[in-house]
Every structure is written in structure tokens, then in C-alpha cells.
Image (cartoon, rainbow, N blue to C red):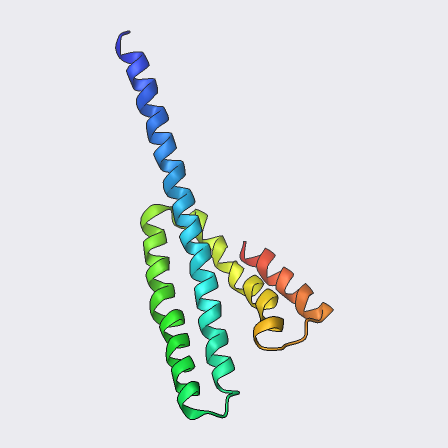
Length: 125
């Protein structure tokens, strides 16, 4: 009997830590998707520039974000939360892209693009 309150406290502490870790992992994964999309958009934007030096700088920055920083964030996220929670968050990359591309790349948002993004996002979730 004397151990029952102590065990209940231990369970609550473990539950709090598990929730915090899951939230941290989800936040890292969401941030990773944004970092990768920004990196890929920088690569795309760099191909539209005339200045070769600036084009190279932006391409290297974009590649660093998309192929180094983003994957490190993803691996770190998996250290905090289970794959079942994190895998659906990977679908946010298409959402970020449809939201940011009109401002960063000057692309037009069409009804078809928005519907397609919604279908891909729902399908990946």
C-alpha cells in the first residue's frame, strides 16, 4: 500500500516526459520540413539569377539546408518521438511549398495546385 502513491507520481512524471519528448520530436520534424523546403526553393531561385557568384552562394546555402541541416533535424526528431507520430508530419513539405512559393519564387497559386496539395497532404497523413 505505501508504494501506490509513489508509483502514481512516477507514472505522471513519465507521462509528462513522454509528452514533452513527443512534442519536441514533432516540432523538430515540422521545422525540418520547413528548412528543407526553404533550401529547395533557394536552389530553384538561384537558377534564375544572372550573377554567377550570388547564384553559387544561394545554391550552396540551399543544398546545405536541404541536404545537411534538414536531415540532421529529422534524425534528431526520431530520437524524441516514435515514427508513427513523425511520419505523417513529412507531408507538411508540400504545404510549406504551396504557401511559400508565391512569395519566394513568384509562382501563381491555382485552385488545382491547392487541391493537389490537399490531396497529397491528406494522403501522406
